[in-house]
Amino acid sequence: MSVHANEAPQGEAPGWLWSAGVVAFAVVWWLVYGQLIAVSEWIVAVLPVDRHSHTGEALAFFFYDVPKVMMLLTLIVFAMGVVRSFFSPERTRALLAGKREGVGNVMAAGLGVLTPFCSCSAVPLFIGLVSAGVPLGVTFSFLISAPMVNEVAVVLLFGLVGWKVAVTYAALGLIIAIFAGWVIGRLHLEGWLQDWVRDIHSGASAPGAVEGARLTLVDRYKLGIEAVREIFGRIWMWIILGIGMGALIHGYVPEDLMVRIMGADQWWSVPAAVAMGIPMYTNAAGVIPIVEALLGKGAALGTVLAFMMSVIALSLPEMIILRQVLTLRLIGVFVGVVGIGILTVGFIFNILF
Amino acid sequence: MEIKVLGPGCAKCKATVDLIDTVARETGADVQLTKIESMREIVGFGVMSTPGVVIGGKVVHVGSVPSRDQVKTWLK
Image (cartoon, rainbow over all chains, first blue to last red):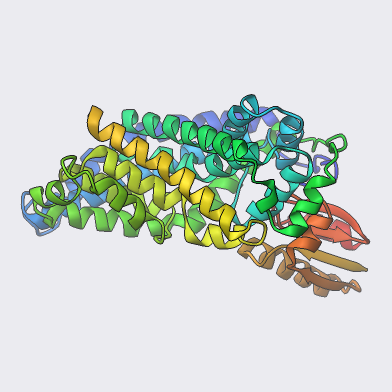
């Protein structure tokens, strides 16, 4: 968005026409979505493979899941793009400044989901929040929830695994963000920030009035379309690769292999999954199709969720970026607290389900 | 005209620099384009999301690659 006021350009389609277009698109979307299974079965039937062979299974999985995931993503990413146009980092900062810990942690975790976020701006955002007097723990709640509870992860879980797991993932992601941030706040680690950040922090003052960008409805729709374009440009290859991997596991990996390695009976499987997830760097799009296939082959839900959360929330590249503002000790605490949260979730799930 | 692009070297920041460069060459505007990658300096402008564009010491855009039309308006 621009700080300049946006004046509507001449000769542009009016808002109602855009809205009508969006509704028409949603209707077509719904009709096409209902036909996906039939189409994927038809494609496999046309190909010269036996539907019930390993290859047939893998292909049917692939041709159904790729279009399904792409369609779900288009719809939700567009909707989130429009919703996010109502939130900006500056607005979030104004909302969080001066909030006490506790309430602040809950708000920060929620705003983490709604505020536009990209890990490349994690540092300016971190400093922006801290310098406005947002407590360190509250800032961490934001930084944990923003990447972990993102629409791509939730949509993919919904599309590939089911709505219950998707809702559980989102809820637990928020809970971990709230508690981990709260714990970090309780530890009073402001002294473990890098020196230059600490100087900004101690001189913190309330931010000035937020200059709200005036956006028209059409601008918001355009931002939604832009979000779809941007996300697809970034992740389409991951989706195809990930679902391809998932299809291979689906078709070829023996049923009981994953039960032995990632089943609920092995207590060490959850910590192992978390440890494996840290150095792995892929986004939600790449990891979730694998998650689906692992679940299908008997891996325990808690173990798989822990693996996924660890891959997304504890990524090595993001820690390297944060190294500019946090000391190694503070990064260690961050990884420790979030890691313990993820472990707890993994164990609870394996016991309950 | 002095234009600074703030960004730690992500893809969008590079796209912003390229876009301003292209538009400047097309319109023949006299532009000194600098890229600012140091976090301290970026933060010093009070910017919370990158890429940011600074013209004459004033932040005019944050958080996305600006549109071609916006860049043209700036270069006028």
